[in-house]
Amino acid sequence: MPVSKKRKKTEGSTRAAPAPKVPIHRSTVTTIIGLIVALAAVGWLIFGGGPDNAAIQVIVPKLSVEAQAGLQTFERVCQKCHGENLAGSNSGPPLVDPFYKPAHHGDGSIVSAIRKGVRQHHWKFGPMPPQPDVKAAEIPALTTYIREIQRANGVF
Image (cartoon, rainbow, N blue to C red; front, side):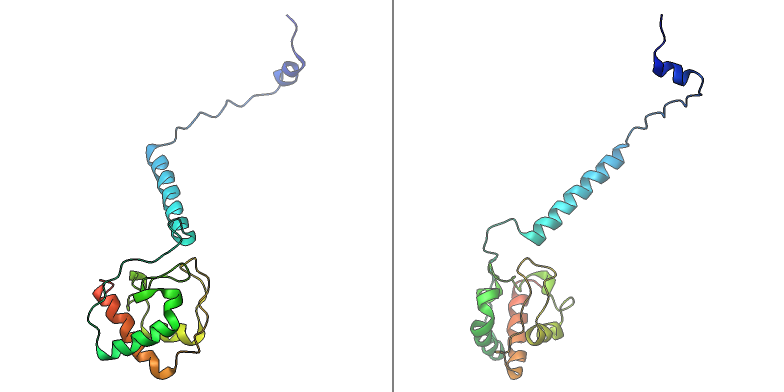
């Protein structure tokens, strides 16, 4: 029987044995699936995936006098993006999200966001521009309003 050309070339050379197939362990497969699910969840949170309106249900407590003054400022300047009673909209995130609790975003963060704006970093809504229509004297009452609504909704 004739020998093929390929066989002739390799007859004289030493052939390495094929590498044994290593099975993928169940824990590796589980880890890969977990990573895929986690990445999908993060992508959904960043880029959205629900209805166009991001508003959520908000409990509104009886507000202090200072918070009522803050509500007036909020309705005048902030509500168009952050929605009625901090509930969010398709233009801005809800401020009753645990992400905005004082331990993570203190009162100084609110002041900085109002005065300097904020780059987009946790939400799909784009950057928040500075809010020059909020006077420095209005910021403490506005902060009180935000914190009272957050407290009533279990943010802290």
